[in-house]
Image 1 (tube, rainbow, N blue to C red):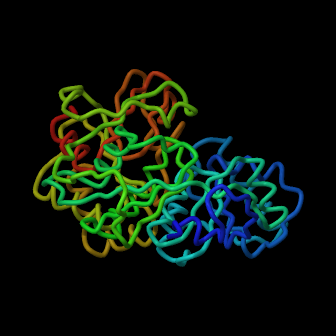
Image 2: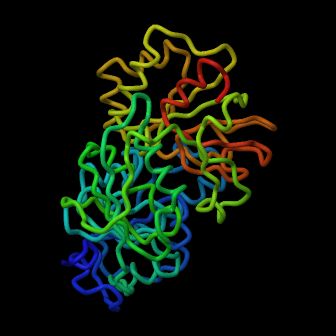
Length: 374
């Protein structure tokens, strides 16, 4: 039986293939570096340039990237997308279709596997060559299978499931594709799994419709609240230590952030609003809410959720990816600690170099906003 990647790439594992992506994505994050290398665009209508990271621009360097990308899109006739929020989530909701191939230079294109599409993150030079030629060559990866069964306990989220899988590392995942069978999780939860489980070095991930016969199995009822600890450098993020949240319980934190494609969609914003209804944030604690997309933001406004957050004492950011804020709204001060649903915990990701960043679920961040501790 063919694996997901074999079906989409049209060849068996171990075969060298040349594919023609349906979309190539460049944003103002890591992939913006490719713009400086690109000398031509083979298929402009397939290249999407998305402004979704430093929104609104919080520093001169970010403004320069914004200008660079805008001029690039204008020069080559590529579609420029702004004010739509996080590119991954926007594309998952409105652009990507099953069977398509999307190439990007970020870290979480595997999210498209939740919709039956193949998302590939490539190096900056590879991304530039893909834009110039309209093609991408690679080796079809082997696939490992994961069966996720049972039901989650109250207060445990899909982020905790993903962290658990990353902590266990199942088998050696570097260079391989992961297919996940998770009938007990909804579409949104499955998207979170796909987007996160490649952090240890897997090539891509997808949701399987059929239960695999030979696989690793995770019983959802055994999953507990997890936390990803601070790490030294961005290049070490995939190796950041993940442990049960109970092991760091009691650490004082000054701020929290709920958002991103993990927890900024309307599904999670609704849950968070229900948890804080009628309550007030702990005095002095700073909580930032970052809707994933403009659609999520508008829905939260129409449902009164934004009002609930403001009444609680939270601040609201523009729709977008605020998991790295070097300067501007949400940046942390010297010696402070942040608990966030974002997936970057390296030094300097959220302001000063001596800030400690912990990543955990929305439920854990809400709890911290009432106690000022993990």
